[in-house]
Amino acid sequence: MLIKTDDLGVPRFSNRDLTDMIYSGHVDKCHVVLCDPSDDIDKFNAAMQDQHLPELTKYIALDVDQQTFDGALQSEWFMPDEYKDINVYEYVLGKAETPCPQHIQDRIWEEMEAYGERDMHNLLRYMVYLVDFMRENDIVWGVGRGSSVASYVLYLIGVHKIDSIKYELDWREFLR
Image (cartoon, rainbow, N blue to C red; front, side):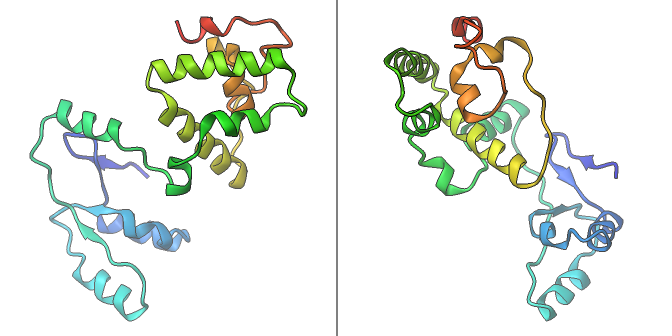
């Protein structure tokens, strides 16, 4: 399905797109769909009410410029609340071998400080959510590539499968 977007890149769905979603078994995702204002969704919403299912929201164009819109999206992480409060350091340390040797604890702490200096702890929380989501939904992702494989923290989260300590990779290659 080719998705139309507005000037800000917000997806818009036509009646045909919604019908395809319903017939393909994705009606549960329809409540998050914004419709084009030219589409008549009143009949659809009436049917949803009869079935006690979520109604659709009509598309309303936002009166902001691209930079403001992008800034607002970058400050909001769309993930379940239980991931927003994860203590990333404790989570990552809990994924390390037990008992965790001091040199590994030091490496984790050093990387976590660097992530913190760059205000990237929310990104790490999102990566925990994303990896969990992909595992739960049997989505395959790569073994790892590029400088990200130098991060032992990302390895412990499950973003890649390269043990950078075993291969003596310098994590600073990733966060330079």
